[in-house]
Length: 488
Image (cartoon, rainbow, N blue to C red):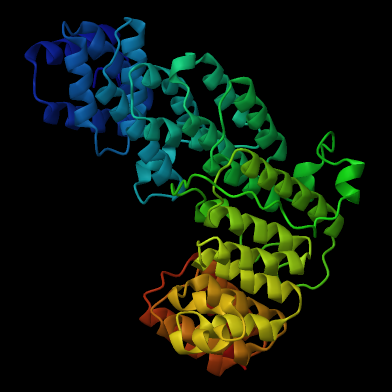
């Protein structure tokens, strides 16, 4: 009431009284929720005033954080608590700063996923990015675990094509003893997600400047950025595109340096991969083929660096090599990479199998792509094919994934062979798998345009049985189609 009526003196007295009464955090939770729904500025004022008036400021800070640990406003309060403590030069502990960072990161993820909490919508992504940026360095000084720092840097770096500059600034301001390779890898991954070649090259420049030795994880991320980039991301030309790049023959086999150590730490995530279907996946001709050859040369330069550092290529390394080879239509190189990967003892995994199928589709070898698909997880089929080509034998240990079906569904939708597309659609769901929503939207819209009511109804049945949550786009397609068929 004091805040709503702008009675500052009474407001300060009321907050001071609550602090002196030393009520439990549950009381503060109720107060904070009531204030936050009315005005976040009042919330911030309350937090800072409570800490200022408290004789045990760290205790009060901890109580406030606990009071909002599950609140939609926890990020705002956590940022305010950290700011209030900095005003009084009070160093929060590692666990407290971990709680502060986690509150902001969790809210960011909910905000990005459009969390159902209505209040969460009032917290902008821009604010959350700035809140993370303000708290990374204090968290590093408080010895917060590196994985949490890396998560914060990844979110910051992923926020825009130039956000890596903020991360590099934070790394510059860190004491040399606190800089860790995962921090650079997180910044680089953000560049890869933004397809920022300029950013990824600047990160690598700083890595060398700070005398950091890259590991396979970091180099895989750099490969990812080159292999999945678009022409506009390399528009700066500069040292990236040179005459030697255009003249070099990327079909030449990569150097066969033997790796000495294996880094099995997972690297690339689904969100790092290009949105499917990626450019040139289905077409035999590529409008940016020269660009893709340049990108492949850059990927090969990273491959050479891996050999020079005596690192072990892993599945992510080969995945990006296959991606780049396919983009540049270097089909023999791609097939040879499959052989080399298997010979190295890695074998096949779902991601490399998908790229192998993609490689053959780009080469208009649909039969070859189907041969791979039919042998996935099929011991009898893979052994039969393996008698003539040992590479197929590894397919029996690979699990079928949605992407293995979706690439064929998209291929046959593109050629308007909707019956064959439905064959793979059925198999996908009979395996208990689900596709991304864009697949359902694409398939249903094409079935509706072709007036294939029988297949449209069948597809809807599979979606209902699989408990697919329809988004607004899919629902609009369904409504429009049924409205059109009723009027016929």
